Image (cartoon, rainbow, N blue to C red; front, side):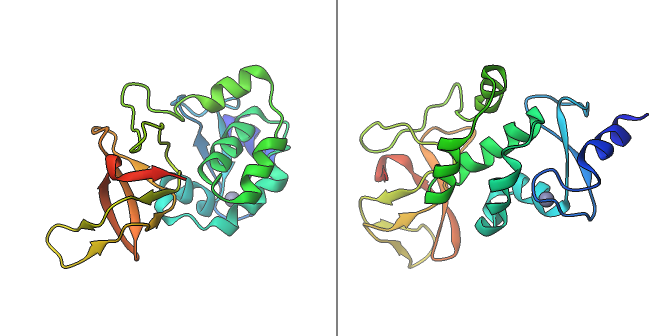
Length: 188
Ligand SMILES: [Zn+2]
């Protein structure tokens, strides 16, 4: 039986995270790069596109993790853990994370890549920032090339970190995506 057929049998033709039955395809769980039964899961298009583009994440869709985090399949646990981690600004997601159980080996895998190894992004007090964090802006920041000012006290949720610059994070302010300097934010 092919890898994909084995995986389809395992998941019963349902997305392994949200149980949707449409357009399933294998999703390789980083840092692995090949589809194997042990390193990939079957995901619907909604789940895989939101994992790849965290900016477009629909928080409510991920309530499905409430069920799928109890899967016996290690790569499913890994993805569930990482998604809950991204969503941990939400009280319910943090609660699920606290309840989650994984074998030591699976947990190590799940935590791989959560923090950027080389580059350390830190806030104004030196606290480490992580992708998905919520931060508060600590001074008025004019936005280059526009009349917009990001006001002191603005909350930015679900931030992203610049892969190549430890001083920058990305976030949405008033619906606009922008890069901001880590030194002007405080982690919530
Ligand atoms: Zn899904």
